[in-house]
Amino acid sequence: MDPFPLSSELGATLGRIRGLTLTQETAQHAVDLLAQVAQETTPNAVGAGVSLIHDAERTSVGATDALVRTADDLQYSLGEGPCLTAWSTRSPVTVEDTASDSRFPAWNVAADAAGIRACFSVPLMRGRDAIGAMKVYSTTPAAFDESDRTRLRSLSVAASALLGHVQTTDTSTRISRELRESLRSRDLVGIAKGIIMQREGLTEAEALASLTARARSTGIPFRRLTAEIVNGHGTSEGSDA
Amino acid sequence: MAGFPYAEEQRASINAAIVEAGFSTGEVWLHYFSLSGEVEEYEVEAYLAGLIPLPPLECDLLALAVNEMVDDLPPRRRARFCDDLVRAHTGSEDDAEQ
Image 1 (cartoon, each protein chain N blue to C red):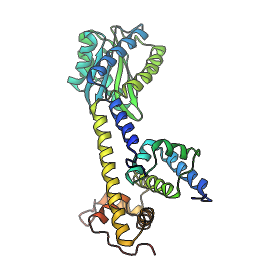
Image 2: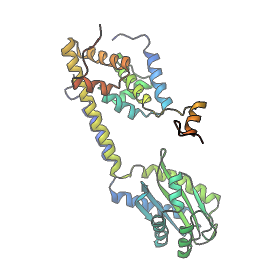
Image 3: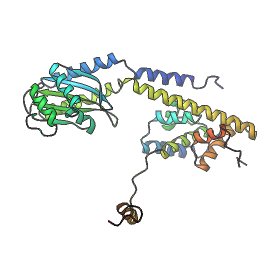
Image 4: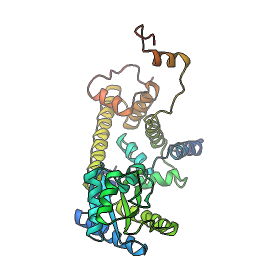
């Protein structure tokens, strides 16, 4: 037997975790660049922005200019706006004219006062989760047509694929927690196997087979079953014949 | 381990369960690993694709892992009976009456 079973596998998993966590600066650089690309692909936009959002808080913001920045900040201070809605509903939001739109009363007034008249925002999706929003702004109403919207939607797919890997240290803590739990659980199975081997005079493989059979017949999750055996609650009741 | 005759049938059923539930090989492997599975993710993937066989005990462990994950899926929405609705709308006991 390999004295360090799966060590290469664990190495790969850990490597994957490290690969997932890009630093905050890298994330910032990525959103800045993407905001720039969004603007360049949308000729009618005066500015563009990309925000990463986690639990309704922005974690990184990229903006092409101060106006975009202002319009974006207003959404978060007012708690409403096209990007927040695009993010929370996971679907694109168009504001044709901030002077007449009724969905975001406070934001529309403030954005209009700052000079922004139109906005189009698409969510950035990773699987089923929205991880942020990409948006373009204009100082003229109804500035974006269907082809602008289609182009930005396509761009958002590519941007999501990139930014999905940027998502903060949160992802890596989650993965390392999962890995720790999984190692703990594996440990319990190992100990339970040893107990069964000793108690019932079985080989390792027989002990494992006996444990899985027990889990199947009782419907108790394997982890709980082995934990109970390790904690001394799992009596040797009717093992295999 | 000379050929378990229904190995292919078992493989297909494990794979079908994974596909139907929409699990990734990675998450299935992690759970299988936590149940003391000995085979690497890459090989599990190859097994699921029908490229290599695995020892029967590992197959069973993989099946157990998948089944536990399936059991953990949120239950589907259930329909309600007449008396459920009556109870829900009148409050549970005699202070109901509306």
